[in-house]
Length: 357
Picture 1 (cartoon, rainbow, N blue to C red):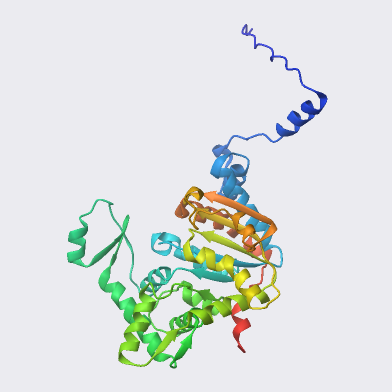
Picture 2: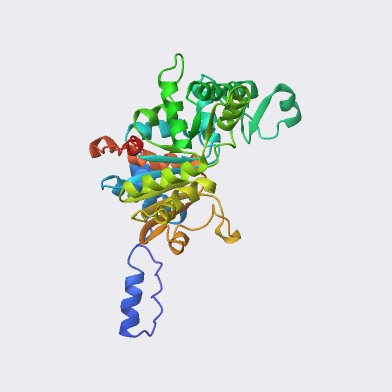
């Protein structure tokens, strides 16, 4: 027989209205994560959804994304940082081929990382306290805890130069140039699968608003030094993303990181409006970032803040996940991959918008 007695709850004098309010607020319990019952990523995300903090947020984000994939919604990914070199490149390739995304807005560095691995090179793990002066002498570049061969990166520069050399002289949007890159890789020998090639084959536009700040810009400049060559017209780029936004219907964005791609994908709404198109604002958004909103910077700004700018719909469904992308992005996409084939989603093939333009 157990002898310990639990004390009674203290009494509280509340009005009937307060009693009902308290009952309503204390309705949804935080459930304990039972790893012993967890058999895979879907079970884990479902368990996270009933927990707290960023576990609940990634659970909410995954379920929102899954819901939107079942609707007629165009989905833009806004990617920045060293995501591909850090291990998220194959996830992106697979997501493209499984019709999980319809347009990409990215930093250019992602595609020098993509091209480097397409050419058969790799990124290598390292300690963070290496002697960077010695690395410079060895022509090894460091990105926090991984390395790449600078000579391999220069081959990447030369590859973009070669692509630039093979296309007709003229002014190109970043989207059109990246389409040529994907087509070039699709017809090249001895290359690995790549984000650029997958996007080309699935007719997914890639926009790089700061394309000069990477190996692509270097390659184009190298070609221009020897030939008149192709050049990037950033205003043509703006007109194209505005046109795409006007014709893609319902849309939402998934932001990983922040920076220029985040603003460019959101601002496509305003660009389209200013150019005279009738356009719908983004109706859902997910962001994964470690940026803080309190310094007023773009990367950390909330998705609801963009409502005030007219970029996102007043009734937007949004989830902010405060966390590092190499942990949270695979969880998000892994949840989607579980039954994406059953959803039988068709890609929007948004590059077709520009066929006659």
